[in-house]
Image (spheres, rainbow, N blue to C red):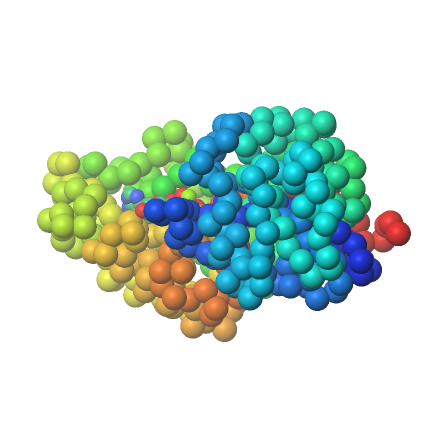
Length: 396
Ligand code: ADP
Ligand code: MG
C-alpha cells in the first residue's frame, strides 16, 4: 500500500502536486474536462486541510520548448470555475518568478505552474530540473495516474528531493485496478475494442486465463476475424498481431466472442454509404470496411454481460466518434452502466466514449489512464507509483 495524502499532516505545508491536465484543447479552450474533474477530490482535500497548493502538469508534446498553444492557462480557467476560487498561473514551472509565486501562497491558495514539457529536462528526467521543480513544494503529491507510466522529472524525478505520496485519484486507480487485475470476482467478462491492438497484447496475455469471456469489437475483432480466415476487406487490421490472434484462437477459442454481424461502410465518414451484414455469410465488398458491431452482436454481448460479476472494458467497439458507427459502443456502455457487477473501464478513447454515452457516474471506475492503464494492467506497477513511499514509512 502506498502512503497517501490522507496519512500526512498538511497544516501549513506547501504541497507540490503533479496532476494530469493533459486535456484536449479546441480553439484555446478545454474541450473535455474529465481529467481536471478527476483531480478535484485531491485538490480540495489538500486545501481543506490547511495547506497551500502548487500544481504542475504536462500538456501535449511541445518538445522541450515554449509552444504558445500548449500553455496551461485554459486549464487554470476551468480549475478556478470548478473550485470557485482564483487559481494563480505563472508562465514557467521553474525559475525565480515561479518560485516567488509559490513561496507567497497562503494556506488555501492555489498556483498552477506552466507546462513542464516546455523544458527538455522534463522528459529527460534531468536531476537539476527535477531539483528546481521540487523547490516549489515541501511535500510531493502525485495524482497523475495517467502520466505514471513515464519516468519523467515531474512524475519520478522530484521524488528524489521531496517526500512523495499518492493523491486520492492515484490511490483509487491503484486500488481498483489492482483488485481487478489480481483478484477479480468471477465471472470476469472483458470487453475489448479500439484501434491499437499491439498495445493491448500485454494486458490480454495477463487476463486470458482469468477472464471467462472476451467480447471483441473494433480493430481487435477485425484482426481475429482475419486470423480466422474471414475476408475483412479494407477493415482496420493490426497485421503485426495476426500471429498472436491465431494463438489466442488456438488456446482460448471458447472464450472469444467475435461479432456475428457488423456495420460496414464505403468510407470512414459520417455520410458514407453503410449497411449491416452477417459475418462469414455476406461478403464484404472490396474497399469497404467494418466500422461497428451490429444489433445481433449487441444483443449477444448484453446477454454475456448479464452473467458477469466483474466487467473490464478497454477500447471502443466501433468508430463511436461518427454517429452511424456509434451504436455498438453506446448501447454496450448503457448495458455495462446498468449492471450490478463491478464495472471498470480504461483507455483514452474509452473514457471519451463513456463521457459521450453519459454513463461516467454509473460506472464504478472510469480510469483516467490511457497508456498508463494498459501498462498497469499488464505489469501491476508503473514508475510514477514505484517512487511513492509505502504506508509504513514515517517521514515527519
Ligand atoms: P483506447 O484509447 O480507449 O485504448 P484505442 O486508442 O485503442 O482505444 O482506439 C480507439 C479508436 O479506435 C477510436 O478512435 C475508434 O474510432 C477506433 N475504432 C474502433 N473501432 C474501429 C473500427 N472498426 N475501425 C476503425 N477504427 C476503429
Ligand atoms: Mg487511444
